[in-house]
Length: 368
Ligand code: NAD
Image 1 (tube, rainbow, N blue to C red):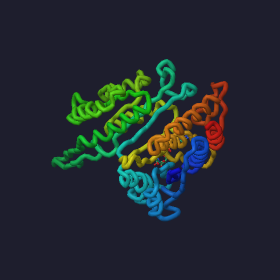
Image 2 (tube, rainbow, N blue to C red; image 1 turned 60 degrees about the vertical axis):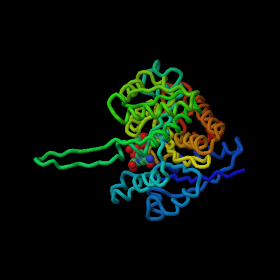
Image 3 (cartoon, helix red, strand yellow; image 1 turned 45 degrees about the horizontal axis):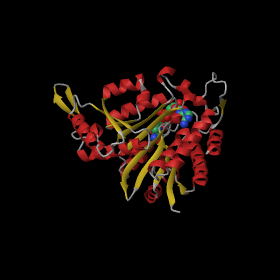
Image 4 (cartoon, rainbow, N blue to C red; image 1 turned 45 degrees about the vertical axis):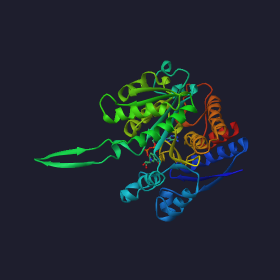
């Protein structure tokens, strides 16, 4: 059996606590679904600076390059970050560096609100239907955040002009569309492509290319939606969405809007994918939240975002769809059984039981 090589970089704050629970659950899934993992842990972020003088030590980067996927915690500590130059700070020196190094162009952010957590969602219950389950697929390396020219000019007389440029090429749109259609195939087979084709040249090209790529996926229902309407529909009728495909900036905004529906940052996993070569997709998997220094080291953090990130890893890097679904079902069952970390606890739920990080991990591992 091929061993799947994973670099586990826990990082700072709650990172090590939630990573420990994620590895516990992965080990349970490994037994149950018969695959073989080689997990190697390495320091990153302030843990990297303390161990080897750099947020992304050379040995950690080398480990990542020898691995099939990176399971990442989170990095950065607000009280220490300002003490070093910006370029050396963990988020820039580790996270952005890894994104660039591995060409991670597709960001996947699933938002799942189980029915049992209806109280944690800001929307009224009648808008939540049978629970919310959306996957936002965001292009991560193009568009307005990277297009050139990008500058601020002095026009004289105290007037300045700032310029950002939105640029997409057909290959960039094609590859992110492929990722989104393939992801839709693994879900409810509906794709909503978000654009602003009524105003932007980029939007017209985006729509044309996505429509063309969609012809190869006749089993997936494709619809197009303007981004302003998409933002509104997420609040009005979020249950209409399965996969939402967005360019970089629209995805940045809509993925956070969708995330708010999930109830807590502690519930939200994410995947950033690179190119697929020889059937293997290199991926970087991390919780959507940060290092939560306010609760670090207290057994209070919700490990579910990190645990669900392992499910994304099994699905998107290793095509172990049954094992991924097994972990997701175990999370669902644990929540249905009333296990709640502080961030998703409500005293109004009669069956809810407040548990710590470790107990939540134990319960999910047992449910697997
Ligand atoms: P944060 O996400 O760490 O925390 C925001 C709030 O959400 C806090 O109240 C925190 O307790 C809560 N929270 C987050 N994750 C949780 C979990 N798993 N369980 C329960 N509650 C949780 O954001 P912040 O406070 O703005 O940033 C703290 C540090 O994290 C900063 O140094 C920031 O730069 C860094 N950060 C790193 C990443 C990353 O590594 N990808 C992402 C965001 C922020």
